[in-house]
Length: 368
Image (cartoon, rainbow, N blue to C red):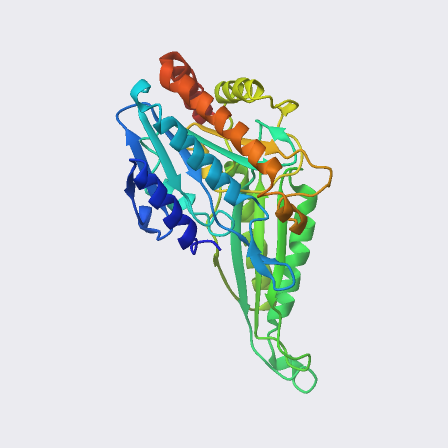
C-alpha cells in the first residue's frame, strides 16, 4: 500500500545500483521514494515509477495491483535501464524517480513542492488502460474533511437543549445538491458521512463528512472549493454548530498536455505497432498527482490498452488477471520502446526540446 512499498522500492534501488545508477534514498523525505541518475548534463529526462497497490481484493481482501502500478514500475525502470546501455551515444542524464502513494496521498505532490522537477527537462510515464491514448485527462482535486460540533441532549425529553450537528451535515449535503445545478459539466462533488451520531434518542453533538471536489482545471476548482466551504459555513450558521474543516489528502492539479510531446510519442508508438491511438481527451476521468508534475515540467503521460476480450477497467478485481499476463508483457516491451524512442529523439535533436519548452512556456501563460 501507499508509503509502505518497501519491497518494490528496495528491489528497484538494488537493480539500479547494480547497473551503475547513482541513487538517492528517502527522496524528499519519503521512505519509499528515490531518485536514480546516470549520465551527465542536459537534457535531463525523467521516468516516474509508481508501485503502490489498492486494498481489498479476493476473499481475504488483500492489496493487489488492479491499477497496474507494478506494470508502471516495470515500464519506467525498463526504459531508464535500456537507455543507460546507450549512454556512450547520449549527451544528457537519464533519471528514474520512485514516487510513492499515487492512489492516496500522492507522493509527487511534496516532490513538486520541494522542487524535485525544477531541473528536469521532460517527464515520461505510461499507464495501462482501456484505450491507447496520448491525450489523457486528469481532473484537479481537493479532498476536504468537514466536522460540525453541537450539543448533545435527549431527543425526546429535552430536544430544545440540543444543537444538532447532523442537521448541519444534512444541510451541507442539501446545499451541495443545489450547487450541482450551477457547475460546469466537467466538475464533480462527491462525499460520504464518516460520523453521523451514536444513538437515535440522543441529538448528535459531532458529525463528520469527507468530500472530493474535482474540475478540469485548478483555477476553476479553487473557486468551486470555496463555494463548498461557504455552504458548510452557512450550515453551521443556520444550526448554531461550530465548523472545522481541513484537507485530509494532498490536492492534485489537472494534467497539462503538450502537442509537441504527444506527436512525438504517437510517432514512436506507431513504430512499435500500436494502432487506434486516441488524440482527443474526452470522456470521464479521475485524478492523479502526475497533474502536479505537468504544471512545473513538460510531461508526457500515455495510456496503453491491453488486447483482451473481457470488458473490465482499472481498479476492477477482474483486471488483476491481466496486469502480469503475456499481453501485459507485450505492451510492456512496446511501451518501453516507445518511451525510449521518444527520449532518444529529444536527446539527439535540440530543436525538438526547444519546441517542447516553448509550448510549455506558452501554456503556462494561459489563465484557465
